[in-house]
Image (tube, rainbow, N blue to C red):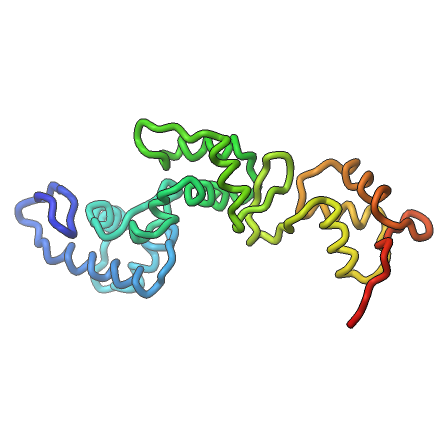
Length: 224
């Protein structure tokens, strides 16, 4: 089969009924139109089986049908969706970095992010992702937060913006009471990849010591 607006160049038996693929493809396109988000391949195959149980297609057959459709595409992390979606075909450094960090599920240094963008084939052929470009882009992107020296996490994971001092201030304002040093260290380490000594230095420099081993804001809280 030569390429068509909906079908990639393909090889099939002359006896194959192409209407079977066309029906399947229409069902897949409608599935993603309704869903509006990408989905892992395993989940997609399961959902498609439930959607058309009478066809009794094997997973291998469905993968073959999906692979020749121009309407959908799989990203390097085995998720399917429309090619126009940024998590399927990311088109800029920020989108590629977001996809890498989200898939990793943990904070990454900007050099690691650059390496994984290239390793996963997300960069354009013949080009290399520059670590400094990644760093420059992510520092401005509100979806990311710098949690350590050159290490970025996603804001949606619950990480707080700001310096260690600002994080400590926010924690104490939320709790509205003095906290033990160990409690404050634990709270900061949830959202920042820093040394405990850095947190202690900030506590001793900018906060009031209240009683034995407890800290609070130097300025009293104001309630409206």
